[in-house]
Image (tube, rainbow, N blue to C red; front, side, top):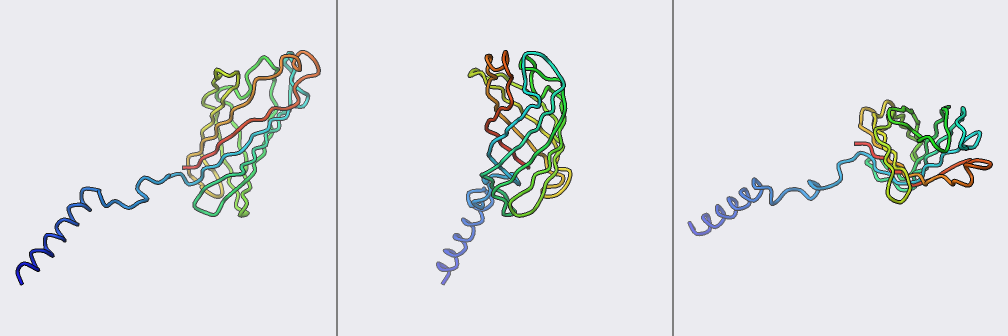
Length: 178
């Protein structure tokens, strides 16, 4: 009789010890904690096309995210915004501190508005530029969450810059809300 009680007591004590030590932590303890994580493409169009001469340029930026993971059934989405800046092929796009406020339309009819500020523009070894912007979701899905967008854009064509200009560029983009 006492052997059975002692055996159950040892079993319960062992289970409690394991639980308290974290060895029986739930499987979600190491899961991705982001509210939203998307990959896709950003396309930037320039009107007039960029040349080697700086001039006032209407810039339209369209982000299409085709692979999203989240907590609300979002699998894809799109955001567009415009700005006018003095730009040329020889000036960096999205200089540090530039702000933009796209509204993303998600596949589940939800929307998110984000106020971004460019925090880094890095020239990578392969000639591309990686632009990182951080901000806050100001309205809609994820309101109050931190947001990060990273885009990698290709080097501009020297030949096109010297001629009729570069009308657009496109590259991979990631977007996260946490």
